[in-house]
Image 1 (tube, rainbow, N blue to C red):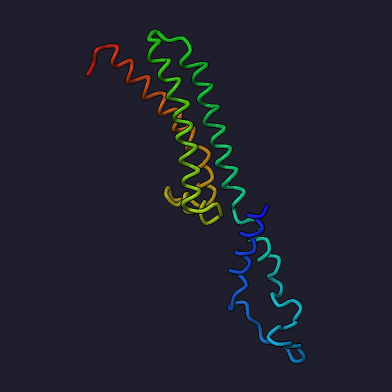
Image 2 (cartoon, helix red, strand yellow):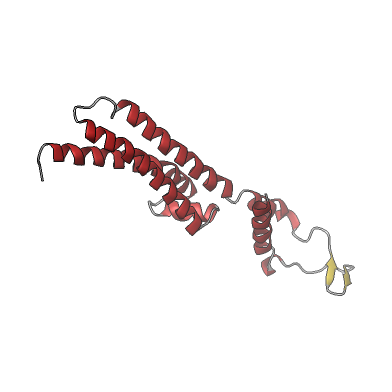
Length: 169
């Protein structure tokens, strides 16, 4: 809660700059550099307040959380279906471990990405811009990264150990 309040305050202070300055109407009261002028932000006040409340922080953090859960869920489903009854039991056991490791690496990767670019709307847009999208694409990438990592790690490990069992280099 404190982080949200602090980020909202910082964002609000960013918007409340000299571009919003207004000419004081005749009759405004000035007390030692404190100007008492109700409605100094004018009709844009709700917009400025909403931008602090809806800056994308919740979206990026929830996308990371949902992506991590989906990655581990995908790993569990793959382990129970794809890698449960195999001819090469060693390949299946190693693939089971690799799916969970892939989900963990994907989740840590999304957390590191959010930490680097920022847990806000601009950070999501930066992530989404890597594939030519915006905030929605960034949120989608945060959700799908652990899933893709789990599937890729499990599949590559299974392929590697079945290839070794056949004696291929």
